[in-house]
Image 1 (cartoon, rainbow, N blue to C red):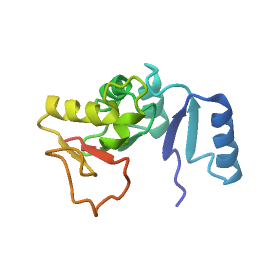
Image 2: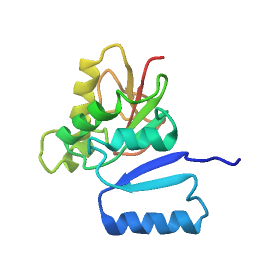
Image 3: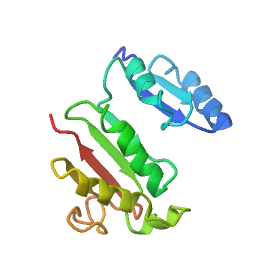
Image 4: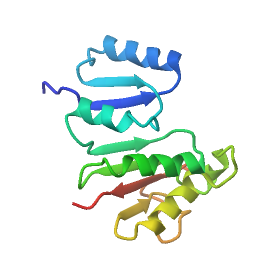
Length: 154
C-alpha cells in the first residue's frame, strides 16, 4: 500500500523503546512506524506526532500509567490535537482496573467518567459493564479491564 508515517508511538523506557525499534526495523516498517523515547505528556509530544503524521492524528490510543491524574492530563493534552471525527481510545476503563492506580485515586475509570461529565457534547462510551450511563452489553467487549472510546465531533 506504500503507506508512510502511519503510526507514531511513545515509550518512556529506553530498553523497551530500543526493543520496539529493532522489531519495527526487522519487520521492514521503519518508514511506517516511529517509536519516540519520551513521555506522551512531554509538551512537545503532540507536535512531534503532528509533524510525523503530517497532520492531526485520527486515532490516539492511551494505555499508560493507569493513574487518575496522568489520565486526565493525557486527555487534556491529546483531545485538542485529535482530528475532527477522530477517536481517542483508552484501555483500563473498568472499575476492576481502577485498582491498577498506585495513587488509589480511581484510575482511568474515574478520569474517564469525570472527563465525560465535563464534556457533555462529546460522544463517550466505555466497553464494560462498570460505568453507569456509558455501559454497553458485556458481550461487546469481554476484557475485564475495559476500553473507552471518545469521538471528537466533526
